[in-house]
Length: 238
Image (cartoon, rainbow, N blue to C red; front, side):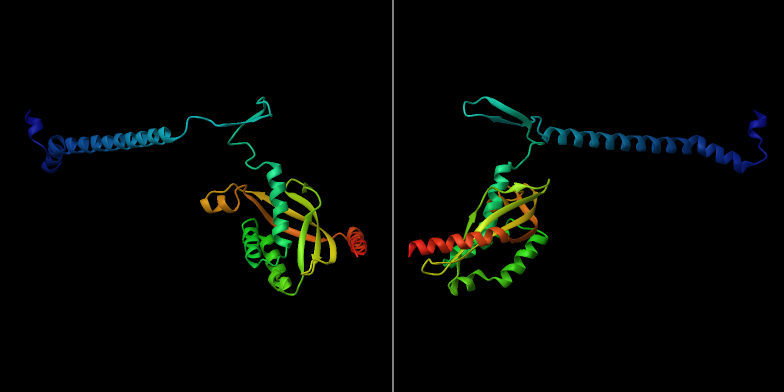
């Protein structure tokens, strides 16, 4: 005991005494606080995960195709099923051509057709149509006495995974209904399917069918035959 009380360095003895009485308890308390904070963080993370999991749907929807008598033809999960049937794509492409190429004396109808067309075009296709309308203003054409009706020759057909081809006949008449010319056209369109996400998109393009690229031209061999047929029809009418 005499050796312990008699120290050669009283400062070291004071430091050791301080750590024994104050330092170690403080350090231990800090470690416990850190452990408590980590536990609270993990608990909050677990609760958040449980809430997210609880809000997610547990039911997996399926799409079932049936025939006229109700027999199941095909079953597929809704999240991987095609959102837009091929027939819808074909109908929308035909409507795009009709809204694009028709020239009518009803200016209100003409404006609505152009507005509907804008809801189906994106990217380069929108630029192609904008340039075409600048050179072929349908209102000016209608006022000059050139009305155009569009007759889709057949349903659009796919030529690749994203490209479709369509043919149509344009008949130009004057205001009294006399045929001026008849020309057949064809177009190739790149199609992208993007389901609508907003109410406005649902109203304008419920099928989510968009054309992003467009190229078109006349069918030379058939246009001359169509012109001769329309001329012969006018002669028979006379």
